[in-house]
Length: 214
Image (tube, rainbow, N blue to C red; front, top):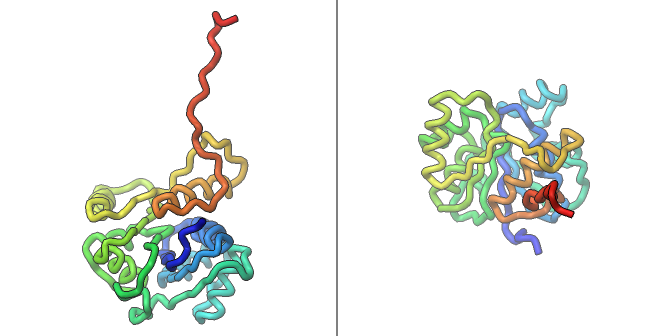
């Protein structure tokens, strides 16, 4: 049974790779999870740059927008929050959650989280997960990493954050972009003990028959 009795926070920062957030949302909603979604201010620009799509600012319209992108009309529960609403429920430690995923996670967001800065709701919600000792998973999508990036990521890892870079595998023989994306998303959800994506997992290397065997 899915562990979906508490909400899961999905933060979307202004890094390239919005498809990761869309695919995660699709599978989580289809599995009947409760999602509290907050997109950073820069995410609006990324949608425009990557898809030539305008993400609405109004909460109700944004919820419909994300459902349309994920192609999930009614399953699960989705509530979107304005990036500036630092008084939202997810900004408080008394708001219980399964944890939080920031996907994709920009290096700017990584830097702010590493030094405890909270300039918007996404950063505040992530900081709350840290101070409450809850699960926080970030998916940095940048290359190459500078020394500053690596130090900030190390600081977060030392604080208990799970760092899952957007690096796909190939042993499952991907045929589409979605296959590559879904592998990464599944590994992200693994960090929260959520298994709702039908991916081909590693089963071990098959031994080749010996040339001398009969």
